[in-house]
Image (tube, rainbow, N blue to C red; front, top):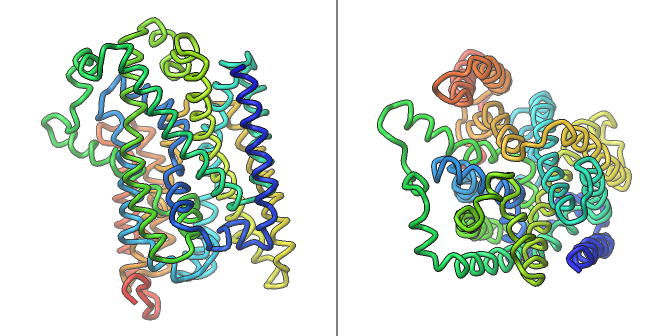
Length: 465
């Protein structure tokens, strides 16, 4: 019965993608849903940005080992990113009226920086999507007995079909439905676990003291690394096509801003539920925790939950992961099509042809992500690694380009390259302070040095104009 319910849900998702395709008339509809989403669709799409495998599987298992300090990156950093994006980045970029964040770099710095930023950005999403495919495969394997590889191929096929057909329209509509399922499913399971354990107080009392330690211990390095955890998603996901395409799909600037704040609040609130459920599951079923930490929650529900709870929980899980995976596939497909391929046609490419290029690149991104998923099955590491690469290369050039009138093309290039190289080199040395902070600092210093040594002609500061 559980398998039947999952099959029906997946079939409905594909049908929604097919139905949403009727709204897709051109590339703007496919990538940004025609900039016409109302608040409830926009906020639910943003809430679903990262609320996938890393929050439900990854963060919950890390929390059980390291407490709140282990999950500062997600959900706390994710909520911070949404709020900061709405406060400081959304308005100037929304007014540019462009299709991708690569186009934003083009507006600020020119075509060369557009190309370089896109080259830096696209590979990031492969690991991100791979993490979602691994998580979907784990769920399908738990329910059906499929192997990891079989589950990855099946998951990729389902995500690709409805993304290929409906683009951002399909993603936004399914995100709204999936958000309702996620919230309802997690609340139901949290209530069930709480009752079985004897109440919320019993679960909290059974947890180690360090489970609730939000701030680091004494010592400068501890506080620096604590800051480093906040900025991985908090700042690193700001220069990302994934969040950009969701925000810019809103029907107005006001709706876009409101949706970021609503989504940030929802993300933090409901992002804590998997942590509570995991805490209760560990106390109730320690043997499952020892067997597989990442699969603790689904294993608990499958072994000890009734059929209604199983359907609700697995429906919520699949919803969360499919939502994240679909937009993760669309984001690099849009960047490749708009910022890498379209310039070669020198304005001769018709929009209907660009639309087909977008769809073909959805398939290409899925293939590469499947290959990565088959190589690495650690969900939390796949996702955090993706955000770090954006943090050390693109965050500083984007921020200074919007707010500092002396930022130059040379400074942006030096910032991207230097930040990435320093991070990669330092990371091999395994320093006491998080290696991405060295990369972020190097990116900032290179930006200021390059802009002062090789200035552009005076330019607009988009955030202040």
